[in-house]
Length: 171
Image (cartoon, rainbow, N blue to C red):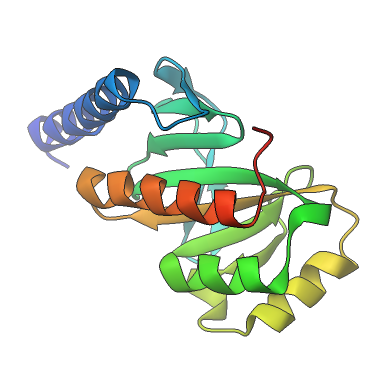
């Protein structure tokens, strides 16, 4: 491991999230509030076929209501919390189509996912919805991963458009 490479990588990760946060604060999506970047502890990455806890912080901020945006060593990401009663097969299908690198998990038992792009590949929205309906969870987290901050920014816009279309936000 080269310390300089780790240092540069972490600085880029943090700096890009701060820059995105500043950009969104300057022109927030209508009806949404952009919170400050924070150090988030206790997150998990899906590595080597299992969820592994990060003992170190990563940068993230909230787009209220219901969205978290951030970066981990694995990827840039967004997560939206969706109440069970607002989840439809069409919403699930479009989410998976727009965000092929995604995870869907409950807010309480988040290590037991109902959809995992690294494990499940392409499954039907019907199958994912059936898994959601079998769960006791009341709120589900829809997470999408991105390879760049530019792709993340586009993803935020797409998510907000999708969420408004299916009325998943508490606006």
